[in-house]
Every structure is written in C-alpha cells, then in structure tokens.
Length: 321
Image (cartoon, rainbow, N blue to C red):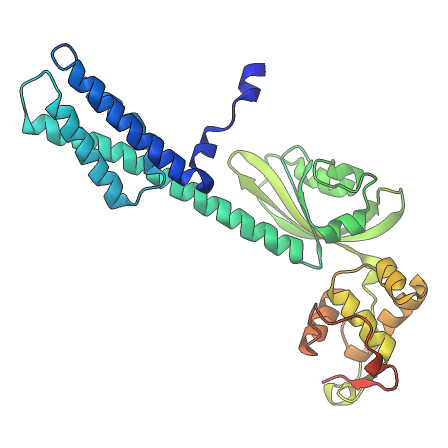
C-alpha cells in the first residue's frame, strides 16, 4: 500500500508539458528495439516490443502519424524477423500496432476533453456571484467557490474536504438516498456558518451520477438577503427613478460578489446601512433577488473594473435606464 501511494498516476505521462520528452523517448526506444532485434535475428524476434513505445507516443500523435508509425514498426519487425517473409504477417502486425496506438490516442483525447470541460466548469463556478458547492458520495465538499466560502465562513477558511452536514444537514440527508433516482429540488433549511452563526438557507440542488458514485451540486443563498418587496410601479414609472451615489457604489461592489459586511467595510458604513440601501435598490429596480439586481447593474454597464467610489456621483443622482 505504501509503495502504491508513492507511484504517480500513469496518465500524468501524457500531460501536455511532457509532449517533447515522451515523443523523444518513444523514438529512442523504437531505435533500441530495432538494434537489439537485428542483433538477435538468428535466435528470436522482438517485434512485439514495438507496441510499447508506439502506445507511449500515440497520445501526442495525430491519427495519420499513429497509423504510419504502426506500419513502420511492423516493417522493422518483419525485416529483422527470423521467420520467412510474409505479407499476411506484415499486414496483421501493422493492423495490430496501429490499432493499439489509435486506441490509446483516442483515450488520451477523451481525457483531455474531460479535463478541459472540468476547467471550464471550475472557471464558471469560481466567477459566479452565487454560492455553489458540489459534494462526493460521502457528503464531503469537492468544489466550492469564493461566494460559498464567504457565505458559510468555515473556521479554517477552506470548504473543500469539509462535510456538508456541518453547514447544511438537509443536503446530506438528500445525498444519502443512494438508491433514489436523480432529482432536482429546492428547499429552505437552517444553515450554520463556521462561527456557529445560524441563518435560513435557500437551496437549489440536483443529484447526479458520476460513474457509480452518487453526487450532489447545490446553489445556496441566505434568505435574509433576498428581500421581498411590495408590488412595484410600472416600467414607465421606474424608468425615471434615480439612484443615489451610495446606491450606485453598493451596486458596483455587489457586482464584484462582495457580501454585505465587506461592502460596509469598503464604504466605511454600518452593515445595517448596506442592508437598507439594498432594500431601496430592490424597490427602485423592481427585482426580488441579488442575482436580478446584478443583472440590472450589468444593464447599466457597471463593469467589474469600475472603481467602487466615483466622486462624480456625489453631487447628483443617476436615473435607471
């Protein structure tokens, strides 16, 4: 067991950084086999050994190059064989070598596509202003973005590897239904932050299968921050509703994914003042959630690189388009 833990995964051989090294080593092995096969020609044939360097290099070769390499190796094996020449044997050797090489090449292409898809998914999750977590079949968090870390506030600042039951027990109960079909649902439950502060969590989650593992992905929000507003005025009435300088600054920081406490620190105001400002923004923009408010901000061209405090707004107000 100790020895196996020290061995690196074999698929690391086909990492993109090893492309030149692997192709060079594969060519050198083919040359070495050819020399030894020539030297031992009267006694034994070593043509089957060409399979290994071909499979090694196939992960970085295009299909036509893999098929050509298989044919070349089959010709070398036939040249240095102690048996009588045979076109049938040459054809079968070329087919076997090229087929094995193409099989390995396809496996590596699928692996690269999977890794690229995972990287795109991680980038999407990390840049999302919503708190997103995924768990494995045992209920331990596999992936959590910065918004989730801010919302759940783990003691050591790291959510990955922590049990979801410590923060959202209801999610762990949903995951334990191993034999249940896949499903999507939403719920509200009692959540607990790392500092033992409790909050009402709104959760949208989905279970899914990865191989034989039963996993779960969830978007988590603090219900207290989703301020319900009274029926708003018509679109024509809210078109001329002005936003104050503080509301504009809070909206910019909200787009950056900051929590209420962080916004209060940036603007040097109290957290309750930030919550009151958010309520005013909900009322003026006729939306009910922070995500909808962020969409309104993007409609106003409030890009993430815009500074949070702009003195040009201090003397007046801006109308919502």
